[in-house]
Amino acid sequence: MSSAEGGPPRLQMAADGCATITLQRPRHRNRLHRDDLLALQSQFAQAAANPAVRLLVLTAEGPVFCAGFHLGELEASSSEDTASADPQLFEHTVDALEALPLPTVARLNGSVYGGATDLALACDFRVGVAGMELRMPAARLGLHYYPRGLQRYVTRLGLQAAKRLFLLAEAVPADELLHIGYLDELVGADMLDAAVQRLALALEAGAPLALRGMKQSLNEIARGGLDPATVHLRVQACAQSADLHEGLAAFAARRAPRFVGR
Image 1 (cartoon, rainbow, N blue to C red):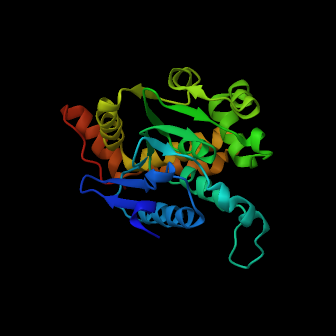
Image 2 (cartoon, rainbow, N blue to C red; image 1 turned 60 degrees about the horizontal axis):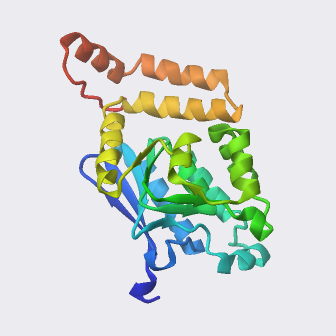
């Protein structure tokens, strides 16, 4: 593939504990090929396995965040009959992002379309730029969207917002995305990095064990799958952690805590 065609997502690990994944097909509005999805799954796993990583930011090159799954591969993926094929590869990739224990932020440098809308929704926070739009065209393509994606939309945005986005298949402007809760923050393009950095600093200031545990518990509550025994174990792990001892000591001394994640 020529360099003009772009390539798979790029993972960068910064010394401050922030990992960034960047989609790299701007010429084609950062559409996602099967190889890209496999690369994303691998990169999610790498970030989760690295104890130095405290936060993951997902972003893209160019004026569009992502156009979703490459439609040219859609029919092939549904008819392919090989042992290595995963007909639910996109769904599994988005689920892997949502399941990451570390906090995640979607830095939406531009518009989102199709499956990319769910990819961003699987992140814990979304910061968008003025002028962007969202469109979910599944109904206009004859597609019934996969169940976990529908569930994510309903639990995070509400039933009526999900119906509007899926059934009407209309382009929704940035201010409406902020209004319905799809975006946590909407800024000018020149302020995007500063807004993401503010979120990153706030998340990095939290105790990793508490952040990860509460993220998992909140997502389970949203899905109606909360297991009280599992939550109790998370509560106890934090109660017995060095981070809680440090947090209380720092509060008493009126200083910034130095958490270690255990």
